[in-house]
Length: 246
Image 1: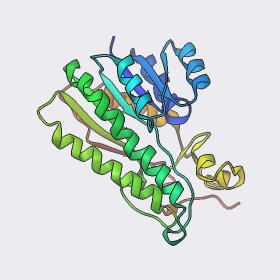
Image 2: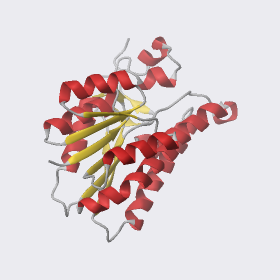
Image 3: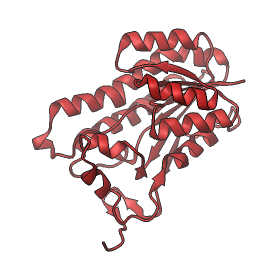
């Protein structure tokens, strides 16, 4: 049975991905900071719960120890956004958090687990980026900078691991309505979080992205899907979203 590590598995895209991969026959190692949530998830889908803050070197080392010397799939999903201020009004603590979580944490986990992926003979790394890693938008400077950096890391990995039995994919979602993404961005302000999706017909769901991740992971081993950009029909661009009159 193939094995998969999913970071940020306590909610949203990570949780949905853990469920989808388990249903597809993977032994899932669900990694996230919130022990209670991943333990509950692990019990529901017969997975392994691994409490892990990907920005903490000791936690990452424990994750690598738990994985051992073989891993088939790594889904680097942990990340997030904070704030919507202009660059000239940036909260540098928020920017630092976004870079450490979206970029440095992903690099740390990838560095720690790549030997096991190579050892599997057919490893796959899927980094969950964003359309924010492809274009910029006002108020999104910190998040777009972090996701552009993640895109660059992903492309560099593909060059550096060429010749090794490891596939590299970036999944770049657009507007996905999850329970926590916008709440985190707006520091728990549910009114601002709900306004992001107001009037939008059918934003993407976490399950839509999990389905795409599972599809990529289950392609024949010689097939590498470099990049998949996924947006709801209502979203033509970061700054152009069709909304019903309110």
